[in-house]
Image (cartoon, rainbow, N blue to C red; front, side, top):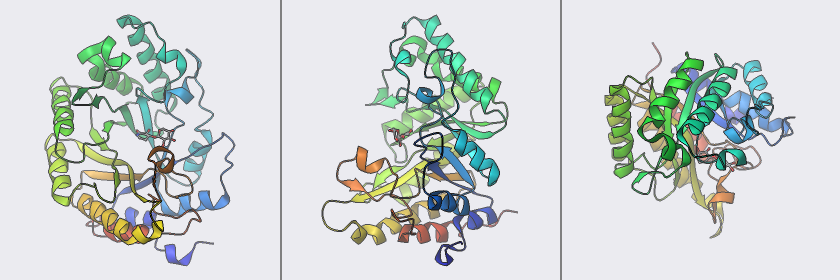
Length: 332
Ligand code: XIL
């Protein structure tokens, strides 16, 4: 039975205003071992899903030329059963790749061939089922281009090529560039926008920028900073998706729950600001329950970053997000 206090759901609230509200799905095995409550909350609260890992190259092409889509399968089946849109993450990245991709012959033609085959293989498999792809993830680092094998071999052709390849095999999907740390003014959003502008001038099929939004209670962007970034992306004629939202709190200096109200305030401000821009038409959280989150394993001393606690009970952040979504003007 739906839990009374979770109603109306985020999903119903979002659907009234034509918004996709999604969560990353943690698939630990291809046989769906997560508890019933996990799947119940996922279907009740979200109209969109993304695989936290299962569509990354390491899982989709474990050996050169052998594609494997079994890991994402339970999520794909669940999404069709429950009428959820699927967001794709990520065709190209420097992380989440199989060992054979790390030890490739760095010569340009070999790398081109591998990337093209990979993008084609995965985009084609999900053709018509994935409504938007993160085509390439996190190409900037430490003030400039991240030094990856992809960049070394393809140089300035990297993004134009991968977007063209994605478009060939996913002609109906919206194609996104995705990164973190670009939600505030600074060198990284400047570099990103310069590259986006260059792609658009070249006629590359590019439709939007994904802002990951992994922050703490203390370093989250202000409303003014966010509005500035949204405005600059939208001015290029692009969409914005918030792709991996989590807002972590300290978990080792007293009860984490003491920070939940402040966390709700940061969540609420973020979503309220986003709702003012119709070009922000999908918002996704990097998980939904603190029971399964990458945060404590990755950021020492931090956790409880999501909307539901480890027992699947909605936190203040859930109610703040729901209220914020409802401030968007209804879909006409
Ligand atoms: C993370 C997953 O959450 C972890 O389970 C995995 O071990 C590493 O990747 N930016 C991204 C995501 O684009 O793919 C990352 O996901 C988190 C940061």
